[in-house]
Length: 388
Ligand code: NZQ
Ligand code: ZN
Picture 1 (cartoon, rainbow, N blue to C red):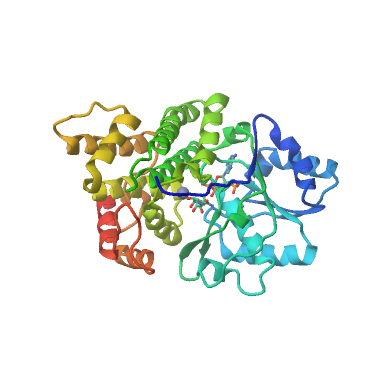
Picture 2 (cartoon, helix red, strand yellow):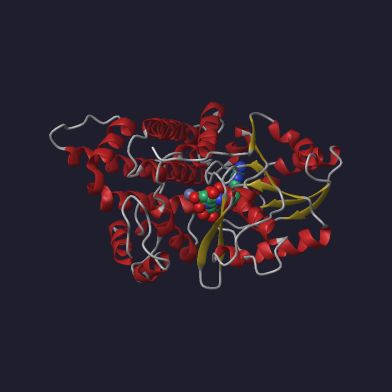
């Protein structure tokens, strides 16, 4: 196990009707808040009214900025920065999923910075200040509700890039599984793939003696594998929704990566797909992750066999570790397909003509990944494995 520091200061407020507490929670930081949300789901399903009431009751003044698109755009973030400066906003309240939260985090770092907020995404500037962010989560997926990251798309150049700093970790996140019962099944499935990917990016490691985090990762994966089909079959199944929602936070709050080297190449490979073709991040991962597994599994057959046996309950073939490892990859792909996700680029309507361009962009700063370091050529090969 490697040395590590672990600190996650996001306060999680979990359970039924907990969003009614949002006003009280916001008031600890703010008299005036920017209420940030997406394309309208919170208005369609009544979440918006409850939040406005709670904020008003707490005596919090509200300025609004809706319209965040999935794969959030830099343009709206710049608008948000201007509003926050003009209105003297004390906290940004993100009500939605990863896209809204990441947009809020990006506004938060842009407000106190005199230059272009994209500088942070290019690594030209280090984050040293941010307006506080609070969250009411409506889709379990990205884990942004307690992560230190944000991912944004700049349309000019079709670039999807990220920032990371503990300064952008939300101060609080309200998780009411009831709010997720209105999700279309496709979004529930995309969320599950993203949660699983966050665990697997940490699971496939070269670090030895990581029993505890291996076991935590395996149980998080098994929980998502068991409960996602239930949530899809019975949208109102609170117990299943609750398991998946808590798993989304656990998968990406830093705990599962403690003491171990993480990989993250599948995410970087996927971000190029979302950046150009605007596909849902989770759907892109359902295509990329099994292809990545196929490409790298021989690097550590034992780890892949362990994954197959412990996560998918497969009987190992003791004489043929490779066969066992391959069965785990097959099961992963079959699971994604069974919950309605695409597992090939063709199913995402992504043609083969820009694979090299995406791979070059992905590896522009050098090889990606840690489990196996991948060059542009490797990334092209992974895209090719995902084509069929
Ligand atoms: O925009 P609205 O109308 O709200 O609809 C949204 C959106 O269309 C809808 N939705 C959300 N909650 C709903 C609902 N529909 C009905 N009922 C509800 N309760 O779902 C759609 C997708 O929302 P989005 O926020 O895009 O989903 P997700 O949470 O999967 O976020 C994806 C983004 O997060 C980034 C991804 O790259 C992507 O841009 N990620 C952020 C990370 C982080 N900050 O730590 C890590 C992740 O790896 C990921 O990269
Ligand atoms: Zn992700």
